[in-house]
Every structure is written in C-alpha cells, then in structure tokens.
Length: 300
Image 1: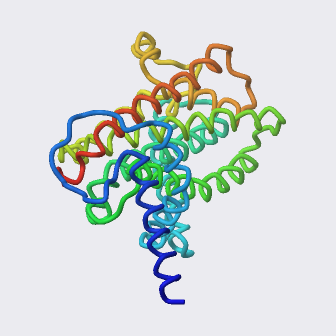
Image 2: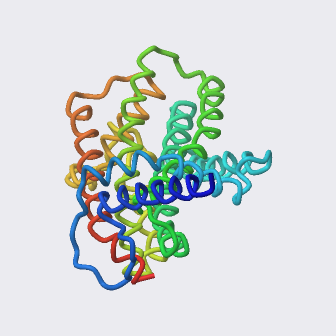
C-alpha cells in the first residue's frame, strides 16, 4: 500500500515538472543567472496563465485583506478619497471659471475621477507587484504576468464601491437615464485591457529602474490633466487638440463618461480608437513583461 502511494506521488511530481518544463519557465534544477531577453513559448505560457488564474485571484484577495478594503471604514475610504478630490477640482473649475452646468459637470467629474483612479491605481500597484513579490518569484514557479494582472483585479474591485456612489450622484444631480448607458461597458472593457497592459509594462520597468515608483505620481497627475476628466470631450482645450491622438485615454475615458453621464453616443472614430489603443497597449506591455520575466529573480 505504501509503495503504491509512493509511486503515485512520484508520478504526480513528474507530471507537474513536465508541465512546467513545457511552459518554458521551469526546469528540475533552477539556476538564477542573467537571461537573454526573449519570449517563452506563448501557447504553453498562456495555458499555464489560465490554469493559475485562481492564484492571481488569491493574491488579489490577500492584498485587499492587508489594505482593509473589506472592512466598513476601508470601503468608506475607497469612496471618500476620490470623492474629495472631485470636490476640490469642482470648486476650482466650476466656481473660478463660472460654469453654468454645475450638476452635469459634477456628475461628469466624479465619473471621470473614479475611472481614472482605477487606471492609475492599477498602474501604481502593478509597478510594485514584482519588486514587492521577490520571495514568491524566488521560491515558486508560475507565470509572473499573474502579478500585475492580480493588481488590476484588486483595483477593479476597489473601483466598484465608488461607482455605486456615482449612480447616487447621477440621480441626485438630475441626470437622465438611458439604455445607451449600458454601452459604456464597452469602454469599461477597453479600460480594463488598457490598464492591464500599462500595469505589466511598469511592473517590468520597475525591476530595472527602481526610481520608477517615485516618478509615477507626477506622470499620472499630468496624464489626468491631459485627459477628458476635468473637461467634457467636446471642450478640448485648444492647446491640447494636436496631441489628442497620442493620448489613449481620450477615446477610452471620453467615450465612457459621455455614455455613462449623458447617454451621448460618441462618434465612430472613438469606438474604433478605444479598442485599438487598449489591445495595442496590452499586447506591447505583455510582450515586454514576458520577454524579461526570466531575468527577474536575478535582478531582485
């Protein structure tokens, strides 16, 4: 009986090792040394990525527990922090510029700020995910791309309570309700894909340039000002107009807030540009991350 159990254990171990070897990122003996830049076999890699999806979910749940985002006051702070920021910008932009559309503008501002907090939070926590998970990388075999994707999942769940509050603001400010608001889910999907790509890119970049985390807050604040959050999509500042085609958040957030807040259907080019930016960013971010991940254990 013991011999049968031992044989079964050895067989299961051989199967696990063979599966990992097929994935292209593990051998029976792991040697950590500088690795030439290159992509692992993509098909086995993505199969393993899907098979380990529960691992990413557990990483995300552990992060939320450590940040107390599942407690009452943790949930309140998730809403209060971006809401206070929206109030600050509302006072500066509405009172000082003497806008006449206060209710609509505040609804637009809160929707934009909440959405941007999801993207910027995914980038910031994603950038720290690999450097902060050095012990996992040194002691476990798994596709490292799960780490920035876990950060995006965490920030998506943090994004849900503020959005519930947004709908209260939408009703309180007297904004219209329309079936067209459901189309905003299209741009929300683009937002998730885009955030995943940028998060993966900065996660790999942070391994090589440790000052990236210090630079990110300034970069993200400037990006906020250049995006259709503090202004409606049709109110493009004249100075920014030539640069809009280089800002992926213009079609993604512009289409999202226009549909969610006012129920306005964006022009066709917005519908095309948003997924193109999201897919291209995710593709480049993932490929850059995957080409470097076998070098992470040495760099950390």
